[in-house]
Amino acid sequence: MKRRPFTLYTMMALGYAFLYLPIVSVIVFSFSGSDRATTWGGFSLQWYGALMRNEQILEAVQRSLTIAAISATAAVALGTASGLALSRFGRFPGRGILSLMNSAPMVMPDVMLGLSSLLLFVGVQQLFGWPERGMTTITLAHITLTACYVTVVVRSRMTSMDASLEEAAMDLGAKPWRVFFVITLPLIAPALLAGWLLAFTLSLDDLVIASFTSGPGSTTLPMLVYSKVKIGVTPEINALTTIIVLLVAIGVSVAGVLMHRRERKLARLRG
Image (cartoon, rainbow, N blue to C red):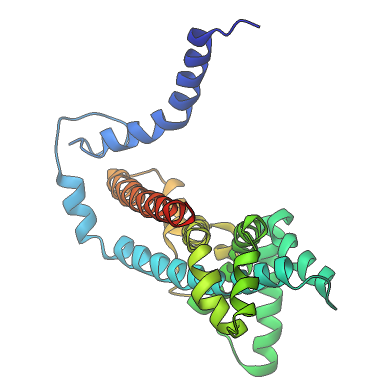
């Protein structure tokens, strides 16, 4: 079958335009001097200054970043342990339940996960007086959501990794904990970084679960933006979106470069 590169490139260009033109338009209008989010009023940086003076948005950003960082770090720890158990320990009592628990949050609707988390926290609070609904409950719910994704990433990496390296280290007398920290952990480091970034993004982007598990004074950035959308998006939101897109692009680029360098280093060592 003869290939048609023009048609292929055209469809690819249309697909990328559909995905990224809305983001580009938000970035462009963030530099508009108009007080309307979708009207061009000449080049201006006034909305970036207004954003820096908006304490409500800044507090929501700080709160969301804190929750996302804590959730991603805890999810990497739990996901690494689960992925290691499912890929290296063979069949053990409770393996099926562990695998099911790691898969359920990925297929369960966010509304059901948020409602179940709310009922759990309310019941535990009535029994023990803790936790109060706020950043703690949002973080715990996000860990539940993101740990399963990290497990999938780590487990796939562990499955494709050559187990003979670990076996050789143990044959030479290395303890299991030393094998993990010296051999296994460096080899799965790219997967851990990818899992952390994925968990961080999922937590930062979540709206539904955070809405169920939040309390007074714990409004996250997605919740704040959603509440403002109901009365009309302001240009400050465009400026905030531009900054987030820039930071994400930088973070992903740096992570990609580091992972690529590490893969090349490992390839040279194997060669």
